Amino acid sequence: MGVYSDNPRQQLNAAWQVATSALDQWAKQVTAATSEAADKLDPALRAALEAARAVVTGNWGACQCPCATAHPQDQNVCEGGAIMTRRVAGRDMSLCAPCAVAQGVAEMRR
Image (cartoon, rainbow, N blue to C red; front, side):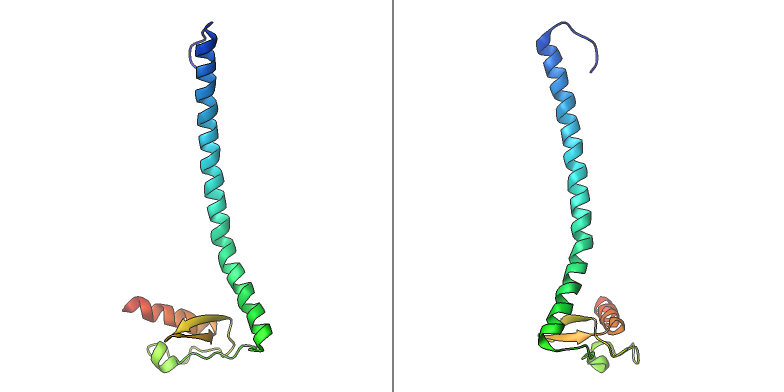
């Protein structure tokens, strides 16, 4: 708190500054932790929603990737078992993990 003072107003002011600084630090830590948790939760939540949608629609997971056009440089990577849905050429398509990654890499090259 610095130098001790007999003045109650100065004591209150110093205590207030320490308290607001601690509160500011706490708020920053809570914001960072909340953001990190949301970043980790978001993919898990999307995967759960995709799984629920597959159960409801009866799509049990055949990869629908047009490999020859979506990732022509990575032929024969398809596992056949879809794990996610991605919008490709204006429509939702079920994709296996290797095809999804290969498509992402193909888009990065552009």
